[in-house]
Length: 220
Length: 195
Image (tube, rainbow over all chains, first blue to last red):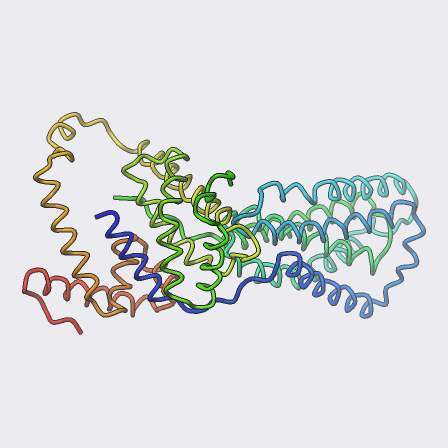
């Protein structure tokens, strides 16, 4: 009976088969999302009259910008790779070195400016300005990435969503540094951290829910 | 993916069949799914799935293959792709068994009174009845057969079935209801005529 049941299932699946569009390679799909990211970044830069040249005012800003950008790229690549069933779990570690470097450089930049009078970002109003840029760009980047990742019906839903959230958050932080290149004050850094954690958390929740594979019903 | 998983089954040929299936070739799809069954069973056994549950894993993996058809890359190993899916479904089943065992109570009387599964007479009767049922299912119209396969044989919920078949929940429910009536009619000579 077991064989007959399996045969009947195979018959049913085969008779209901329609052509499917193969997913493009993960690197290509990551590149498409990074293209969307580049468009959002360019739009923000033009709209906010960004002055990227100011990034040279601190020895920590340019390396932090590069580290955040590399984190976004690697997290996106890892998310697309891990969304496929036959790719290694080890992809999750790919963005971690760049992430550690980005966090360390942001912290060092903050320490370097500690106690400097009238540093930008030491009022709530200024810190909220950063929040609006991070939140606004993440709102544009996250849905596109979740929609693209969902096409693979990821089995490792939470980890893929987490990586997607990290890509969007790091991308949003990169855009912030692009339009607003300054070291963070303590208040500013705390607002960035909360905002980035919220972006990652919301992406993980939304992605984990949307990617959530239809679970096996327990045998009776 | 262990190297010997599909060494004796020509991974390239299976990959080509799967690629044809992605283009809509139903015969190729049937062949590749049938060829995958022994491989899935082997993976499930290696993962520690009890023999009585191996066929549950097989069905889950077949449904997963159907759902994730677009993710197979013909330039990569079919065995690796299938093996990864089969291992995950095996782990899912072991977890669900683990949860269920935690909820179960010790009932020695129920165990003693339960009919012996190795009773040859009863087994043969059961097998004959099941074969009649499967044969009757095969005679159902396509939509009804699909509803029975997804909801009854594979044990999926209405939501899951709707997602898998691309039909609405209402259509699936109607097809299932008609299929049950049709099966009753075919097996017992009673019930409404199926539409």
